[in-house]
Length: 520
Image (tube, rainbow, N blue to C red; front, side, top):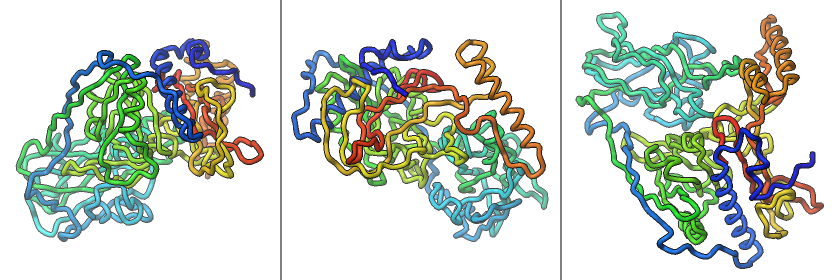
């Protein structure tokens, strides 16, 4: 299908009427992208980049941003009594294959080796209550239980963690719930910390009553409805508040063209193909953008990492990134994102009990690099539409050149190169419920014929699902009559020796509907 040319100064006209929110910022991020791509193309062709003259010092302003970074820190001498290595053991109501109840007391608080002997998962979907019991070699005084379920960010937001549970102890041969102090309800966090008056016991039970499934209205997602616990810790901490509130500050710099935040930190893992934060900062400042470096703690503080302070966030390291960051909130409020160094956010980082950044051992699924395999690869709600997995890898690349039908990248080049890696593709649709389709049809933004077809498919799905031995099927499966929420614009493409397109290597994704409306 032929698409009209996209000119940088025509973006406000090209997008739908409902997508004009945040277009001033989108125009700015287009300028940043053009600057970056121009610099890359000139580096490839060994010519000198044409960068705008440096703005005068008086054009830049600074302000202070402050916030608290709170994390669990157990006091010295607070030993974990639930470790298998000190004689504890675990049992469960049921256990899935490749799991062991004792995997939840092996001392590993990350997702690394999940399903390979580490962690516990119950055996059947919708099996609630399900329980995990920790047995101690002797009676101990306990005043704190820490349960590590799946982190809040896993394949989107609030997908696989425990939502409702009761903490019980065995007292005089009978199980008793620890009142309100042992009641977990509507939990959205990965680390659950419960403090209570000291109890003397040798048995503790985590009674799981329900889990987060992405807050989806689609029953298809119930395939993933399992109880999951990564680790359990039992402690006598003797303090009412086992947390540390650390003040974090940042000097926010704003230039005449806007404010850019760049992630910069000493990481526990080595990025594969990182860009230099310092070099990027020099490039942005020379072009008139104020630059602020944010470390891993600062990106987790919403009072610092927010749309009020910054227009654009730059991730220069590719895969590694803290899962507790405020990135989702920043983008949902209209902030913009630039990622460099390959597929971003695939290597989740988390803080341990000492406040040290560690490799969490999993792909958090912040982008669509993680998807549900069906007839198509289906993304999860609230994932960023970048690097859609339906287009996996670049192959047989002979050269790169600016993509046609766009005028963001204005420099002309054709560079022979051999490239491997992910295609910069995107997912631009949104799966919606029948009710949402009805509402959008009444508003005139969703075609009536499409909504009628989806209702017919829904009736067929209900009939199939009610049949004996039927497999789960949903009218939302695949891409049938999805609701577009973004536009994908390739900027630089890769081609084979015959000039055939192999995929995009630099692209722009603009969101004009959905949770990230106004961001790009």
